[in-house]
Image (cartoon, rainbow, N blue to C red):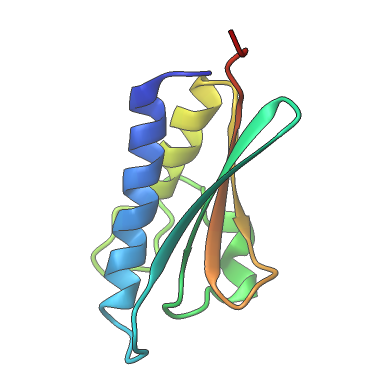
Length: 113
């Protein structure tokens, strides 16, 4: 459930960041992985990449408007992603627990007909 445009805005901003950081990395192969799962009332999208890790000291600020780790960044991409998904009654979070840089989008599932 939710608005398609909200999901698109969030996914595109997260993937855009992944591509940027992968282009700064010497790792090969460079990968972006998107997984969709569902459980109970929610659908979960995980978007991961194997680019450079995000330092833990920045985790709490990733979705803050104006905060960016890019030298030429505006700091609005992840803030837009979070706001868009919240408008559709979902949430976006950073998952710092793995080897990859991973963002998680949770949204309510549509009722089965």
